[in-house]
Image (cartoon, rainbow, N blue to C red; front, side):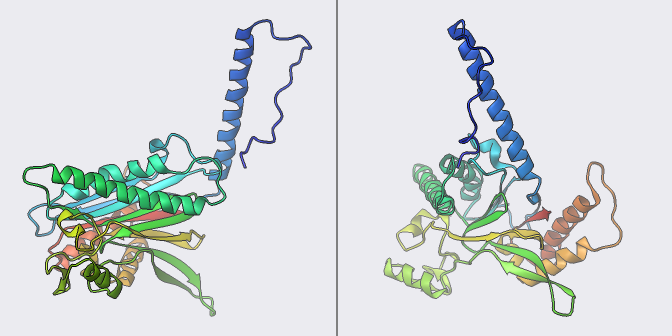
Length: 341
């Protein structure tokens, strides 16, 4: 329902008709302006009860000659939208892309996926908003892949780049994670045990796509492809991606898995990262590592940053550096999203 459906039209204080068309237009504009101000005020009040998200990023080239990862941090995505849906107060978007065969697919996805998402984002008030948002994500991935493949095939020689994608879209307090490939998203949630002790849980927010998974392998084989040594045609490590035009005929698709959950007061942070991190860290280890840094006693203050922001920034940077120290030769990109209630 529109917030202003039930508001009566302002009445004239005088019984006489407007003296000119210009006066009527002026009054109409004033009424419209008042309504817009009221709507912004209602949204502002709604926002006060919502979690505030802030993103931190750390990227390491590792032993690779080129940095093929890309990322996007949009704690406020409204700048990309013509307008927010009626009752929505805030939209955030964070994404990490792990390129292979070059950096062009990951860079293209970082530049265009959220714009394709913004173009299709549902407007107004919809009873089936959840389905519309999921469809919007599916369509945005498909369009981004199609557009990149057109661009790649028009080059001489044609580009062979591909990229994973893990995108976090937060609509007010509802989290949507859409992912392709083996980059991952995990969340830290605190729960109280029966003995009163608090414990931290690691929640998987994404699903890996590689050719060794039964459903993925079956799709590839039905499309005429083969899986050798855990790779598509013995070469490609992932079974879903943006780009990789030469493998699309072999069952490699750009349809993401989409997972949804509602944020609670017990949620502390979300980690998005490429497989460079998870080659040397388990999901539980990443959460414990971040918690360890956040709980350190001493914090070196930084200008314009709060103590909490300094801790999250340090946790993000140290996590990426530790992955390299543990021997990861791949590119490592970590996005750490703090959830402040």
